[in-house]
Image (cartoon, rainbow, N blue to C red; front, side, top):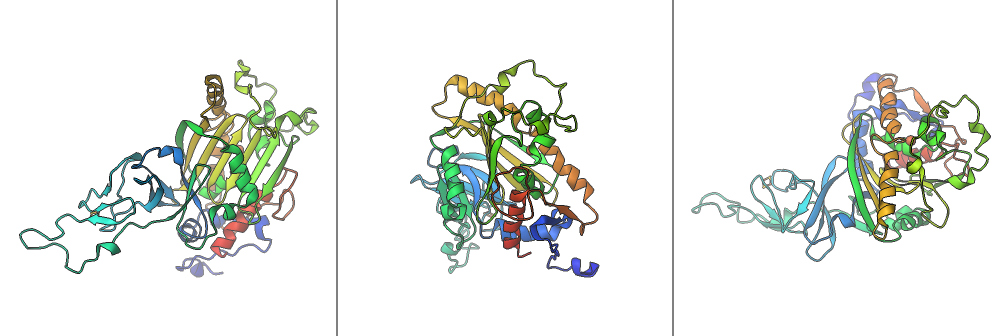
Length: 417
Ligand code: FES
Ligand SMILES: [Fe+2]
């Protein structure tokens, strides 16, 4: 492909012949690819997490969010049904809801006061008939044709998903039985939000998604995980992929690491630091969260949603692209309604492991930018993804990049790359 062809309106990435075992660096830096993702991934054949139902307890409650870089309103209508609209007035395009959340009787645009109901229907137009017989809208202006853009909405155990697509399979079918079962495992009873924050990542959104799907890095990059034995590749665990490859679960059981993994005893692992200690081991006090004995489980739902169990620190995360090399990462930490005050305190304590300054997650916020900074040039060079082979399939070993390859398989399918 010539340089001139690369600057034409239709973005072209020549995917390497080795398929998902290689990723061209251009995919993280190209503005045209970013635009095509908005159309084919975020507005295409996929479901996108937008809210927890419990964020909207009452009729009229709403929150704003994004699907890709399209702003949306998630609202509970007077009948209690959750609706999702593009957050854009049908008149001249102003954002309708400016605040992050609130409660409304209707949606009134601040610019010229056009008013919409909870079905997105245009209810009234200021000065519709003009003033003193002058001005106003033409007689044949059809209010029914100027509503808000409404999205498909489905919920699963209190998680609200929306889609621009009329043809994508119903949510549970799209997730598949294994992914559905894992969501039902975590959201098995009423949950309670115990914290929320947003962090900014100075890298392309896909670099963070890859990081989440990459079980290989966890005990190598994260000194805390390895040093204090929270997550090692010697533990019993697995990497499970959906048929599409796009969704995954990486899980492990801390109790199964009795041998303390001889692979971790040498001095060559940077993350294993015998000089580090804790003055208070309260942070590592955990209790068995679920009957299956799994202590760490990260679930990635294509393209940008994550369900996290790190010991008793539970959270959902949403990755929101903010341009080709800027990303917002939303976190909602939760426990259960029936937690004791002590359990809630311990969850909050353990949540110091995650988040922008988390003892573990801190490095994830930095490493994407290390990649972004070094790949600005040489877009035709490639990342190598051969840990655990070159295929996209579930594996017993987490010394594998199979779930990262799975993401690229689903991504390439939607992007037609
Ligand atoms: S842009 Fe909303 S009323 Fe004009
Ligand atoms: Fe990580």
